[in-house]
Image (tube, rainbow, N blue to C red; front, side, top):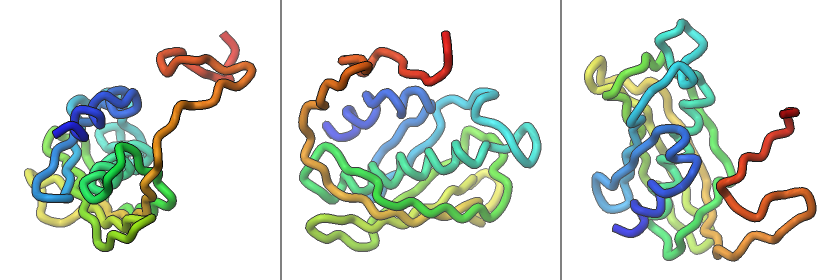
Length: 157
């Protein structure tokens, strides 16, 4: 499916070490293909950082929404995460997301983070609203790079 190829080709997905697939029509699952020390933090060194959990939820919700709209791009309008218990780093962690309602200009998605190797209880849940976007070329602005491959940082050096 072309949307999976585009999803995996996104710079932020590769940077985060994520991989996604559709388990059923419109139901997405996303996993960390690799976990590094940069993914960890809080609640002990073996637990995922809350920002990484939110990023995983965002990726899963985007992929789920893409399964329901006729566009290559969706924008996250809202993302609410409820952290229920520590998410210990594990290759079996999985974000599962599915649309609960689809309208012309918005998709509502519910998602869970699970580790089936440790428990059937969710580690976190999320709700998101996403909107289909008509893709267009980005505008060039003074002081910005014209390619996605260049690194932008407010830090010196």
